[in-house]
Image (tube, rainbow, N blue to C red; front, side):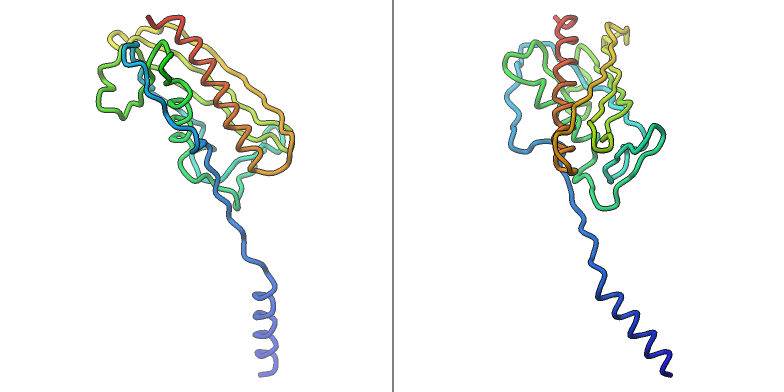
Length: 193
């Protein structure tokens, strides 16, 4: 009987001494930046596909520890699906009154009436352990009626981390996506008339 009381006491003591895990959620998109009215006279480009690697299709933030080893955080999570966040960032960045084209989501009601289709394959979007944020992607534009490829390009963006912590890394990921959106915009502007 004494042993069972002692065991119960030890279990209660260990339960009291361990702090609960603090879970933090991050938004990749900056909610303070609003979407501006697009140029409705410009040609329309539909974001037809946005493909992500499997390791980004889950809720935990991912850090690359070595060449072939990733760590999935059990305490730091995305507040929404990362593909939805990437799409929102691109729509905000590319749609402005002076844009030479209007980017729309495939989910918009008139998406099937667009002139061009944008396809994006994110190869990597991750935090390099205490070093940088890395974005590698491939993208191409096709004509909607013929699916003929009009251009294709690759992007490889590294942004150095200047502070510790996931919050800083998420801000740098947002910067990488803004930079990527600008690259995509310049390339599309050369072919969309």
